[in-house]
Length: 468
Image (cartoon, rainbow, N blue to C red; front, top):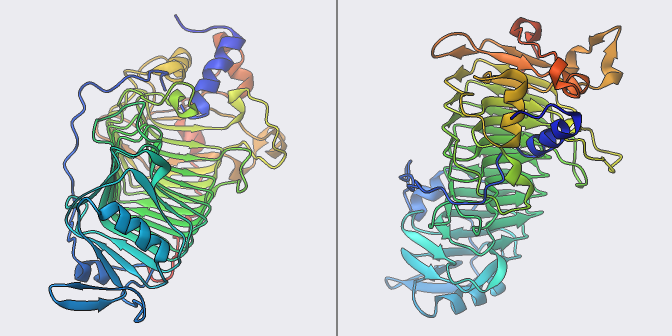
């Protein structure tokens, strides 16, 4: 039965728009870990050859020394797996000096304590994301597997598995690189998994590339409250949210594959955070498909409201360009564009701007969607639009201060143009805004995509010094 009264409607919208899905915390019974893709060189020479922010080849000449195969290498500390590895790693991270390279050799390292790094200009390196594994399956202490609070750090060519909390978190860590890193909870999608896989927050110049995130009960790859962000050529699978960009200023998300998550790629802005008004985000040349994994977020978590079957979702951001993506096979919708206001939650933050504006959706390829909407949000959209739900759905909520003589300012709306579909025409609907949604029996959705064909200027690429 569909909800037809205002209270139930707004409750449903609240469930949809604060992070959209079903409230199910069960497992995905058909979980099959995807094969690792891409090159995985796992050796120091090939890793140094790639563009990077932290110049790992400039190791200190007066730092720690170790011998391997009879050769002393200044500035490089080598770890071998074994019963004493945890003690050695913890001690060396505390003693680290700028320029140190921590080389984890091939094998599985077992940790019961979380690791932390507070020293600038350090590299933590393995021999490949399938060859060097830092396992935290027996973790007893620490909120993360690895926690970084220093600048110019590179983490590359290793895996972090089965952490108690987040896999890797970096806070206020500028010029940080995650390259060919795999984070995974090996038991499949479970509510008991850690929240985030790769998790940089409040940083400048963030590069995440050629990495894999599997099984996070919130977001596999999450970048929050940061500036100058690049997430490229990564794979996110079997997370609640595959890739999430939240409250960021300037981000490029491209060349990634997001599949078998609850929601594929999310671009959000939330209140009550130090950095707000997310803007200048480019999401392009990604493959976003079959994100229909049952929502497995812990009960009570806001991400537990993400509707299963959402491809790309934008909430309360401005100037977002979504182009040249392949988006298909989603039970609810391929793309959802919404404001925060329809959540009907009091906004106490005076600086928060809840509107979604200047969203440019162009030259994407869409596939089937909208035949199996899920969760309160999906059911609500179905109630207004019936099935199949269109490829692109906008809530239609606008800032009334930007409406003059009944016409919305050009830079305050959305643009959907030049897209294509495998079969038939690209479908679109505006839900009609708050007034329309308050009375769903008389809702006035607008399905005429020709009304939303404004051409917005392209967003400039993110530039990080030393990164091509």
